[in-house]
Length: 253
Ligand code: 13P
Image (tube, rainbow, N blue to C red; front, side, top):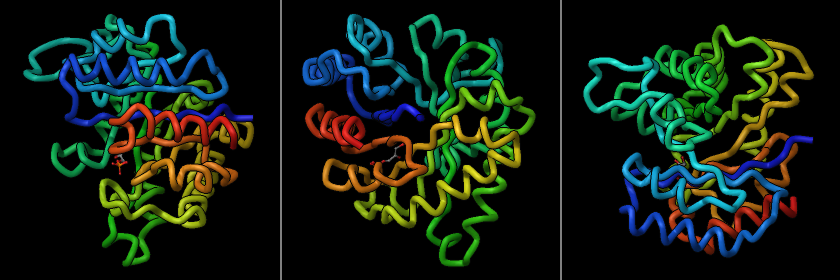
């Protein structure tokens, strides 16, 4: 059985003080439950504070991006090692906002995934189609390219460590969630692609999160789908109670 994983992508939200208070709230409500992997991904500036604040809890800290080089003249960037030093365990890669606004490509996602794994970080690799692509019947083409190019060259052991997030771009921050059936269909497609990249056993071990307007009201039905192994939560992760409700839905699914 795949352990469910609920991660909060805070995006460009929360000062250090706000981050501390949000982590405290999550920690308090989570108690010592270990049924679900729980991850918070603050902006870089709040990572160190979040890492201190999660001590003594089951909560892990993730970053929202990183550079694939270990060091060098890359103004504004941070490396996997720098994240590791701050006790970061996960890193979101290829989020649609990075693809859309910061020219993230499948090639850079692939380099970052390899660098993250080499440094001992767990990559959360994001894929997803836009509304135009969905309407044009291109879901399979888009997802196939993002998965095959993003995960190129990974062996079975590396692949097993990766978390994939399916985030239909049209569902992000819009309040318009994919139906459980729409999400399951793409999750099953992704798992099929993973089989082709490796084997049934490896593909069966990879966790695939859903992301896009997931909230307490719709989490349970999404998480009940056979290939939905968790959630990557934006808006609803900025509030301790709603985030915890989603974690509980995952624990009960
Ligand atoms: P929302 O939950 O706000 O739609 O954001 C989803 C997301 O982009 C998580 O990475």
